[in-house]
Image 1 (tube, rainbow, N blue to C red):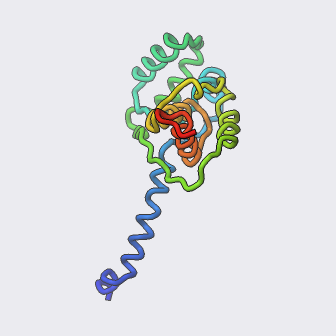
Image 2: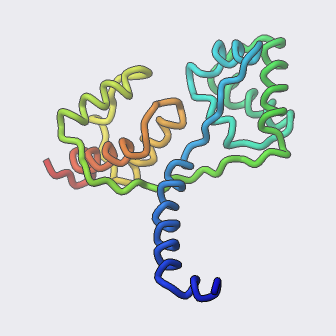
Image 3: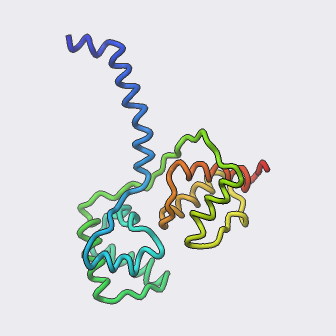
Length: 187
């Protein structure tokens, strides 16, 4: 009886439902969701880290204490002139090593583009840019021309630095930028 069930249209229906749910899962998994910890480390992170990037970036790594130390030294102290007290550095390194140490699994750096059916018009795109970009810097997209892949890479980089942009809005913005500020724009 059970074998007969798997040879019926119900199996096909089940497979279609499961497969249609998979893209949504893959898209939502494009960015890790790291919860801001409590206690002293929370204050250290808020004081030293989140002005440049979100804490979700931590999940892209699985390093030992030395690896985290090198990342802080090269990309933060040297490249960004971060002034981190010895006490704060120890607290941060302990948190990073405990939460994102070599025994953890680093979150993959991949992105599955959402399929969109709604598009930004010029007004919507400019309002979105004002709301999403100017919190950290001026709007600079009008100085550049890129293909869709270039715009997508830029917008994803901004999200990795802390911009709050959903996958759907990334694709709406990328489509608009490609249309208006692309290599061969359609204005």
